[in-house]
Length: 241
Ligand SMILES: NC(=O)c1ccc[n+]([C@@H]2O[C@H](COP(=O)([O-])OP(=O)(O)OC[C@H]3O[C@@H](n4cnc5c(N)ncnc54)[C@H](O)[C@@H]3O)[C@@H](O)[C@H]2O)c1
Image (cartoon, rainbow, N blue to C red; front, side, top):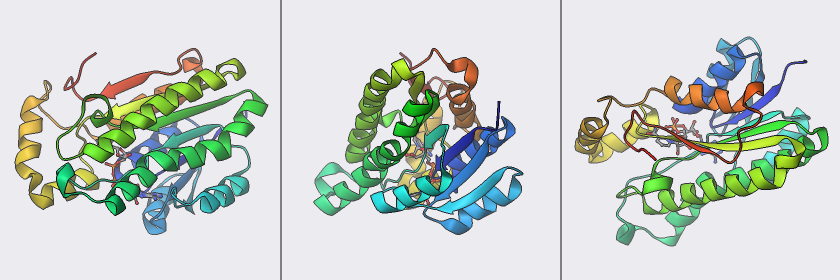
């Protein structure tokens, strides 16, 4: 089988970079896509079969341009995401729009641009990185939790619509993971929250980005062909069922 082409959004970030590395190790040719092109280039330069692309998932035209340049995309991983810890009563509509545009609508843009080709070729894998916040809620992350919950429901529906073409769609929900996103939240006074979370995790440690990448590459693999519409938490046992 020829190399599979994988598009990883947020590929310059903590989890996205680990996913790009793992997919490259699995033999994919990886487009490391990020708003921050320098970060994407740094990741792509480490890898043999990878290249960096500048992409804003909130901008449909940017997504269309990138995906048409790529041609066939066999594996789509939506890992771009963003949040800031705020009580809901201190948020406003501009903040809601930003959180929803990156964490939910971004995956709509990339899926809309790549799924038709997958359906036509009758092969493809979509793996969306949501969050346990989208399954069980998370204080100070109300809008993000809603966007990630929406992403989970969206993925299940895509899984139903694409099943007969042999295209799968699944969700990986990281628990608290050691990345710049989480470290940024800690700087805003969330240090105590991170300590409390670590104590609450049965395995007593935060996830590493590689822990999340392992689940993503499994869903993206050829042998996972009969697994679709599933949501898998990777959280050291923080959330179960
Ligand atoms: N770190 C955690 O604890 C945690 C927990 C649950 C879920 N997640 C999710 O995992 C995913 C990766 O998060 P991370 O922790 O690696 O964060 P990160 O901040 O390290 O990486 C996110 C990446 O997304 C990119 N990005 C942001 N907006 C974008 C846009 N509009 N277009 C393209 N790229 C954009 C950023 O530049 C960054 O490189 C996110 O979807 C996040 O919501 C993270």
